[in-house]
Figure 1 (tube, rainbow, N blue to C red):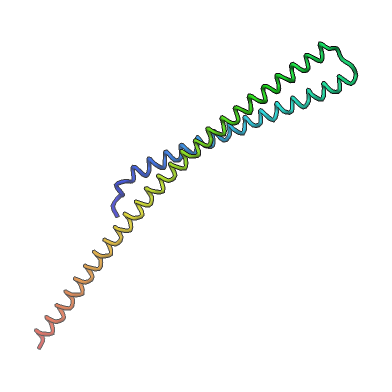
Figure 2 (cartoon, helix red, strand yellow; figure 1 turned 90 degrees about the vertical axis):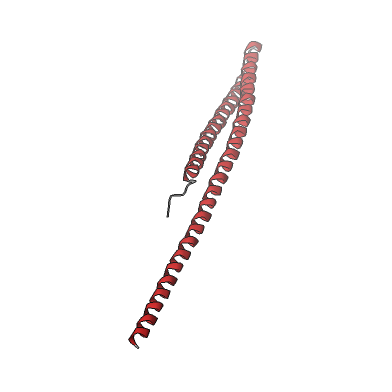
Length: 152
């Protein structure tokens, strides 16, 4: 069977799908890293809150208490900022997921076109073979008839 003339488009669509999948993996990794950062910040917050509680029970100066509170506020702000970054990462990943899905649909559509083309070519080839067989049978029959008429 001859080379499929739209193979270049299939190859291009497959390459685009592959690139979209790579981008999807990259964004998922980034999203996971950002979530890990948030978990670390939450761990720091918990540690400092425990330190504050332990130090406060033994007595501390107002200045020291205010320093703890300021630092804890900064960690809480960092956690909130990190949560916003996680939301952005998730949204980017979702958009990339949509792009990848579209690329995959495109690849499947080209594959379906190729399958239909191959099926049509197979039908043509089968018809050609059938015609040749019919011609061969007809010629063979005519030769037999011709031999029989010449031998009588």
